[in-house]
Image (cartoon, rainbow, N blue to C red; front, side, top):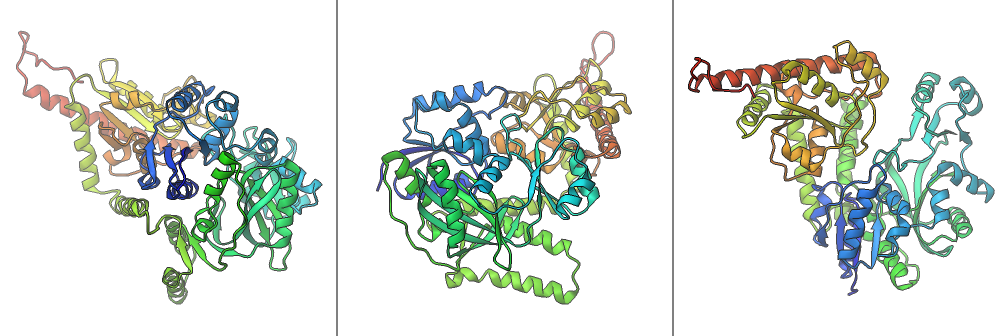
Length: 582
């Protein structure tokens, strides 16, 4: 067993959970710094402590202060960021933090190149590594010109998946199937740097590696069986392709790279291939090599902490790795999206069901469900069941009655009534609802505020949202977004959200919150009010009309409660019940 203490930033059931398990099995004490305080991964038996740190936002000073305080309070042998939402802030403050603990970060040059898709393409091209035809989008580019140059379909990528200014939002890779779709993507750039690439037909695969000063210590290849734009959720181990290994070696050597990385490729049926991008951090499919004896996390730990290099190990090929929750969701979506006759539907269902027998033959492992640590899988299954039940019972008289009862409960809480409207970004739905509620209730009404679960304060309402709000007599031109703090959440008598995503985000961050939380649309029986961001004027007007209907119902409930309460109170000398509406 190995001694040591590690701080791991993250909370996902993919790379974070794999790292916590790998290090914990070797006796390393694992401390977690999550964002989602309800994540199933935090049920891992190998996590010794959980630290609630603020998100990085603004100039990052609050985040840096909290992290520095933690690093002074606990002596960590290594600090590991599992994703860019932690890695980029850590890189930004690496000078201040590296004096307190060893940071598992790529060096400056690797950060500049491997976290910039354009720079990665330039380096790969210089080294003779095949890449898809493509380039940066110019300001004067038109969809017609790009399609004439690269054909259709076209892949549109952000130059950087994450930026400090945009945290924690991930910019997505999108596919344009026609000129109109491409033109819409070009119009929605908002000044962001984007790339276009010619579509390369084939199947995705990943080559994972551990390197020390430009030398490969271990490689592992997985071939994607099912994937989406963010990665694979069902994959199979394969023999490393020598040509791909050589490509990785060339890039790693040119950067004198030390650490973990996963190179994403696409290979055609004819055997041709291109490099798509490089993830110079822990990757989502890490559970598969770990289950097959390729212990990337622990060997990485020993390399960085003790300078210890270990020889490469062989592994079984043809073993599948499944992320059950992601695969289940994708399977349901695929089944619903495809128009199938009875025979095809039955064939699809039987084929997917037979796949579930692979673990019995030893040919499949799961990202989350493992024998020595079942807590995360149990919690994930519980969450899946609860989400399914909410989806089934998301509307109807019982949900409406429950929401109304929560409003009445909030009215009975001591002190002045405080209503807090909460959506994702606090730039569209919640600021409009709060402004409309203030106008409806007047100065004698409750305290009304709004906030967002996205930690990006200071953003304005989009122009389309401002125009739509003006049709309801609400001016949002001066509004700037605010982040939902614990203090704001705990001070509220009632939190009012707009969909289940908002509700989950509130409790993910503050799982012990006691204030009642309702969905505004439940008061009218219509359910979730979709986020209109990115939509046209009609989308915003529909959302705002539904919000207005919800505010009408909320207003009626509050005044009805006041009337009922006032009827039970003694009259003062003037014959008027001694009660305030709120």
